Image (spheres, rainbow, N blue to C red):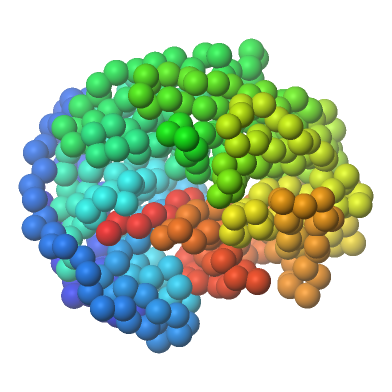
Length: 429
């Protein structure tokens, strides 16, 4: 068991400088065998330090907390990194000299338990355990082959991974229409179950944002794409029952394309919406589906409210639902005065600074409020929940950097900035 490095923790900035991960992963042998290396204890103590204050943002934070942020950097080749932070509100640039490199542009996922994270190789179907101790030391653990069902590629999303409990986790593979079940404690595959009924013939399923939970079931949005990058004119919401390891229900959302993020309000209502990609597909004729907002009420699997974005905004195009708190949500609204008249590439719309923040009250029929006092931004974003607070990413115009935004206030508040695109963020301890 090799410890990769140990650096003293600080009250702000990056908690630890971690290098040489490629060499560590490259040392793995028999990569197809589960549990090829036995993990040792990190000796982590109970966390409960006093709350400090970040010098750069002024926000309070727990100096004993650790967060993992998984990043991809565009280029040839595409690169993947994970960095460890003390606070998502540190409002400081994260230097790529202070990161772990993930081979083949993979990603990091985790359940928020005891400083454990799992790195998904970008090309080889395997998942490797890494243990981060409170002092910043990182120890490589076991490796599990996921050859039968892994979405292990540069396109893998955090939404493909669900941590049910300390002894059960899911890997959703929409290509083979199989969910792999594995045990994080024993690091063994314990079974599979099919999700064929959630598929759409002739299309490839894509898991949307982070899975949500309601009434003991796990829920994720699924859209469908073709090899030409067009979206099917329908999406669905999939409910998984962890008691039976099976699909509890599939709710089809007809005439609603590219559904991504879901919001579960405190009363149990599920809200969903099209991603901003739906706007590009509409403008270019790649999809016949609408840009929509919908609700599945508490205690039900069926949609009882459906409208297009133009219906809710008075004619404005929009997409992507980002929860602020309870029934309050942010959306992206296309500023047609800034957008190109005839976009030919998805970057002309999704990656361009042509979008405004919109505020939506899901509990009323009030129109979406467009926040014109905030600067325009790119459309593409990812949403995360950290310590019960909603966060979203905002990319620079050239997609060279990304900033985490705290969505809990009256306006999005910037946190840390990284080089590249943030693809996942989660608490380690």
